[in-house]
Length: 578
Image (cartoon, rainbow, N blue to C red):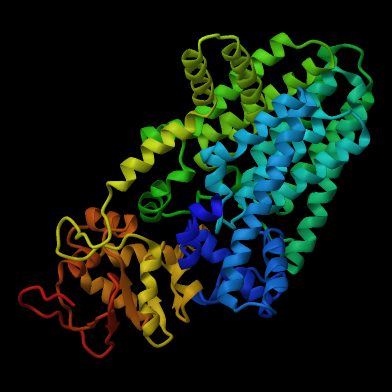
């Protein structure tokens, strides 16, 4: 069904997000001979910065391509790999969801959780055909760590949980809050039940050691570089301090709960970890985006909705983000209340982890996938309870309505998602024109591919267009939405929002041969409204400048201009459409 639903996107290779285009390019470059340890994109501003991504996520994609390349063209192999790998990721997640639900409950609820997983909009957003970025694997690894932690409290499961968490943070450091939550729940579970000592020690030490080994294996010569947005010496030191502190706390052998909690706080509490980070890399206390200048921060960072808290989202996306976790929290709490014995402890731990993941999703919207996945056992529990009540209704019509209501209650994101899709369908359609000009509007990033007819060149383009541009054509770009590229990002934003005279100097200095833009896409609309007399707004209105020669792109709404280094004076007269 997913392949059918996304068949149009697969056929045209319409990436869900610019990061997916960049990931495809990273994998292809690696298979083409780029070093495993070199994660710079050399067609983006000359490769002057290393991506903060990990090579680990490239492995399944590359494996699929190596199998497919001998039998298919590169384009076809790309499409198949970018379809198969997310589907395998989703299948893995569904298996973990079913296993976790069975572990804390029973087979009937495990079956329901399995059915609910692909109905979660935040999960499907991150795990669907062509979505090959790292977020899907983060959800899978968080579920794997949770399942191991909630299993038998032995050394083996502790080691498995630690391996999953180490892989999670190596893939992306944004998984650290969830990893800390899971570790903290494991530590509190030991404080409540000292027999869990082996599991906690296994988790803590494996988390640190595996993270260290994966860091060296994936970063190589750059392993000792101090960075704040990925695993680095400072963060590894924090994990080491936490591992030692937790291990020592379990060795104290305190007989009271209060004493064990005190030992945890003293040995591996937030204070010790923060002090360690402050001593080694104090700049990381400010966060990875602290170095952004005001222009980039306001016109890029604050416009990336998936990185913003829930209160900065539009109403419907906010409901999609939190609705299912709220239902899951309610179901998990009810299951905890009505369960006794060993199962009660498992539900309590799951509730604590879900609360932490839910809190993280409120702060950063793209973390919603993990919270929604962890909510599924609780949602399945409450669904079965509602279905059992519905089955006891004798009249057919009320029984059917009660069953439908139960399904709606446990999958509210589908309802909100349907409303959102309908509202989005009323957005600017293909063939329409922008509000302030008669320009034909772009409707998707892939519209930029029309410039493939131009000779291979350096293209000065908006940030969001550049990944698709360099992934699908022979051109090179200046900047995209990656914060380590902040100087080039500033140059692009300042150019499109600045005066034509200032823009001319910056574009010529960049070495770009062409300037490209797409009317009506979010980014160019932001530029136009922020600076109505800036370069982009004036170009879209049809104004002409002697240093830019319009280049018609047949059959595409993309606008392109060739940069003329020899001419400086702006042309006067009525606007002329390129």
